Length: 453
Image 1: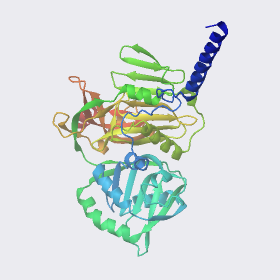
Image 2: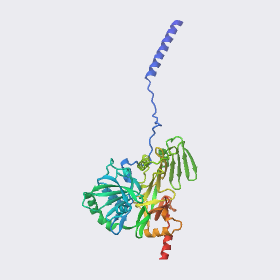
Image 3: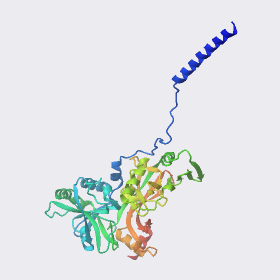
């Protein structure tokens, strides 16, 4: 084979290889591994999310129901009884809202007149939020807050009866309130269904004016309450971390005893393993301007729901502070609010520029199963009457009664010293003093009162 023929053969082979490689390159389809989009990561939830239309009905509830008669006031805090009443009222057609100015005397007649139902909430509630619970025409609901609903049960021979929505604080002189109408037949049916039961089964309450513009109702007589113990189930801290942090890949953990701190560029979460509580802060969301109460409630309910944070069904709306953009949801046990100095009984949220920027809560749920191993009634305890409590507060040198904002029966939550999985719930009187809920030591004070009798 001469040199020229060899070059021709080699060139032909090279051209063939080139054509093959070009064809292979054009037709090659590589197998790619699926990579998760880091800009749209899978949303982690701690528990089950609730349907949005169930948030307000399950979280915003009255905690006291009163029936004003001519010579006395009867009432209950039994949530099952209150739920039945609210379910009935929720079928009414409430219409024709109007704003009226009431004098102090008119306001007294409206709220304390004979044959009136008074439904009391823990704090002011926006009418627009509650419109999905009552049968209200959302297009005509005013932008107003209320703490009490007053229903006039008197049949005055008209086609409709009045319903009043009263704010928490009233004013000297005149107070602006909202009133609406409801079909008289609905009111008459309600009265025939409930009034006999109210008269026979409800507890008698006493009225006490804390200030000129703030009246509360307390049980007239001593009453027995049950102490409870419940086991707890812990939620996953890892789930909270993954749900709350935006930048989940750059989190640093530091530990100091039983306190763990998770830090990222934008956020910080502190976990206290002694009390099973956590606090989450998102500093870039800070805001000075107050949010409207409607947006505060809807934002805080939805924020927790987004990560399935309503793990315990016994939390209820308890207080709102629009000036501080702050909302508190409190644990309720056996129809009574629960208090704990370490934050184990409340979910507190502060709203920033666009969303919640401060969030504190427990990360456990109570085991309310019927098994004797998970919950038990420990003992019965008798608490003093409302009148005795008022006397105790009046006699306490360290308490300025003018600074007392509210008084309720609640449960003191403590860790069981013999079993850290258990929590103890002890019935107690509580008073709200300068914005803080404080337990009243009634045992020692009642011993003194009894000694003076």
